[in-house]
Image (cartoon, rainbow, N blue to C red):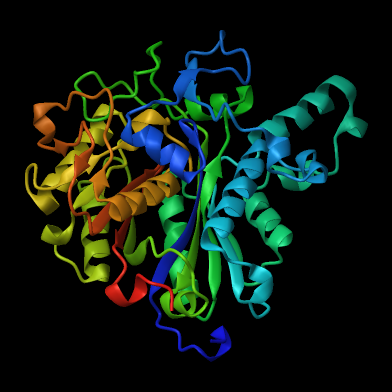
Length: 416
């Protein structure tokens, strides 16, 4: 059947996943490590961290750039873009999708970024100050920019539809996936969406330290969200890319996977500090559920933002208890095994879809949940039916985002 004659349904489904994570390169490698509780957090090796207060992070140590990126692009782009290109390639391959086979301008790219190409920028600035402006490469003008990964994916795969980038730290990745759903509803056929992060260089780490949320505890297990011992988070690099399509077009072309449907989304912004208005995270969750047409009792698991900062943990735990009831829904934070990435919520969405696929909730490792939070925090893999997952993310400065993904409908499960 020609996809040109297929009636679009307006339902956005995820048909491909690509993961680049500290504890696994590739979707299945990451998923296996996550279910086993294997952490990818260790000593920083990408530079000498001895003079920095944070010396542990989640590095993607087995990523060899030359195996994933054409040689001409390596010197033109940042490590963050290298991983984004690799994850997008994995996702397209998983979906068995070729953008060249689609009508022109119907394939799009929407990614999230909040750090941009910090390592590339640092290297060029170092050349500027040590050798002079003539040593600064022409690609400095674009390689650092937030939209560089979106642009490179678009160019490499000939995706000329609506392309963009969303900058809202953790929350941005969920907003990018939601934008992909909007594009499906406005006639885009296929969208690459998600995000990667690679800010483990002196400049990048210094920038992260400015928010005062990173833990200074010299221990790879120091990232302990919802724990009485919580002192902040450890950073990570990597992320995930997804292929989002209209369910009707995906079925018509015989897409091999329907990981799940993007069912609901909402974004809110916190009131200014000192305001007597409450944080807006609960409102984002409630609006996302309403957008999906679901009640709190329909949700099988929450993938938490899990900042690891005591006050932020209290705000999130309180919002979840108010919406779902005390210990009313299983809550997990697999990012305790990868570190917290700027675009890390994209990896949470991919993990939630794998949870739905296999009927198992992945664990939160190394955490003893504080009783005050009243959370059913999943410490070991928990098997059972998982049809609906809520992913929660917040960004520095007041961004809140909530995304609902659910199992594909019966008529979406098998290729046409």
